[in-house]
Image 1 (cartoon, rainbow, N blue to C red):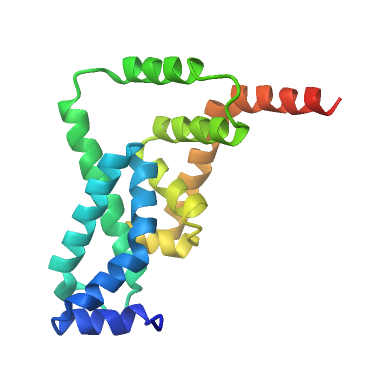
Image 2 (cartoon, rainbow, N blue to C red):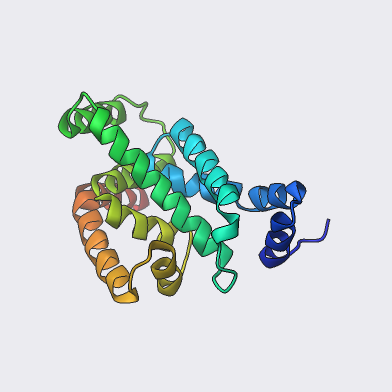
Length: 195
């Protein structure tokens, strides 16, 4: 199958071709899921968010401005769906954030010691991301995990590029503070293993 452009697929979608929309979903489903997963940290919730995002895209196709990039519009929808989910969850949570963080820490400490360092690092990064506000988390996920440019992030989140850079700077500072103790221990382990 020839890889067709987003513009071509969108034209066909607007003409009623459901297969063209399925191709858009196939093209972006992994990326959409990964963004949602980084935002909410639960694969089942991320699947629900991804599905809701694609439903919203399908229903709003007639409002899409073809002068914009489709993926920026899609990412904005995914981030907004994730933020809406987090707001709803926050309203319905019975546990406070501290007890959730303590449970996460207990789960990490209870893991077997022969775990791959990559998995441990991934868990720590994900925990650090979850400590960020959703505004900071969104820019980190889009910049570092989806490798979007500042301009693309600004477009996707309806922010100025300066605001994106500012949020990213603050988010990185907070992540460095959150991950600092872990990164120090990891460096010591690597140094000890090298000697």
